[in-house]
Length: 74
Image 1: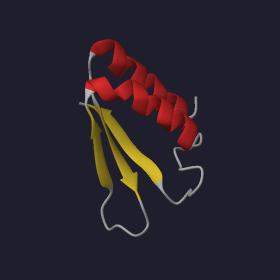
Image 2 (image 1 turned 180 degrees about the horizontal axis):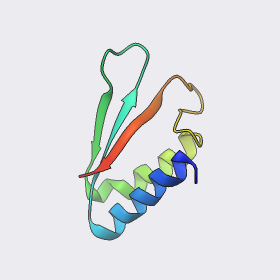
Image 3 (image 1 turned 45 degrees about the horizontal axis):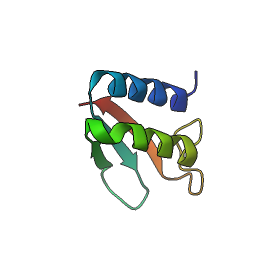
Image 4 (image 1 turned 135 degrees about the horizontal axis):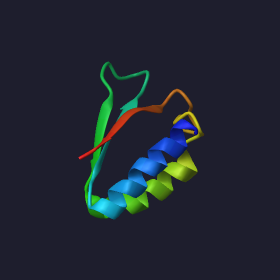
């Protein structure tokens, strides 16, 4: 299972169980990862975005130096 598939599985669990999700995005220009939080009502839409925008290694398709480094349910 790819990293993207694991993220999607986690997000599907979040949708079914009313959870939000937090992701840490790594970017070469930033000394610390960017933290993005999505409340439960946004997770389904954000999941579709991640499917389109990120590759199997959780790197942004149009700029692979930007990546999801960590995620967790909130």
